[in-house]
Length: 207
Ligand code: SAH
Image 1 (cartoon, rainbow, N blue to C red):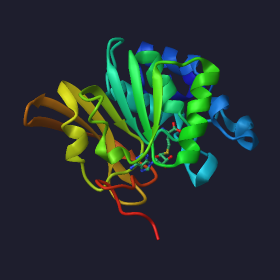
Image 2: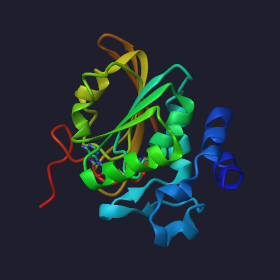
Image 3: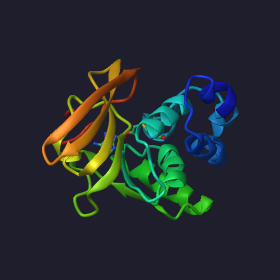
């Protein structure tokens, strides 16, 4: 999967590729989908959500330029897969999932795999995690209506925020780099498709 689908599409960061080889994706998908775990596509997980496409996980992690000493925040932990891969790259990962059921499962998966530098929280990730901030990198795995200032402001100077911005359907994947207290660079990395980011600084609750 890694060679054929990720390296060939342009992800070159060797640490990212090694981390993707190391984390068993089949442990993060539902039983019925095990046979598809190594195809480069998003797959359904519990609670009507999805595990991201491996190529997109790799692209986001490469864009976040995670160093071994980094502290990382992920919003939208879902299955926990991306957080697990990030955990192989970083010193510690804090990952927030809005749906309790998914947060519990993700936490169990980390424990089963012995990934003890990845901490899963249940709650609205659009607030970030003020108590553990600032972060060297923040990844958002759900499409936001705009860049939440709450997250931007929890970056260290030099920190990277990688997130999809846009409505349902297609979003733009952005990389925001904090250059100074109030200075941020923004770069468009291309079109992506994510489920909506639902919360106080995201879209409002469905229904
Ligand atoms: N990174 C995940 C992808 C999960 S899909 C993986 O590798 O499997 C995105 C997830 O974002 C969904 O599980 C959804 O419930 C969650 N989500 C949406 N809005 C959120 C919010 N405000 N805070 C935390 N999680 C949120």
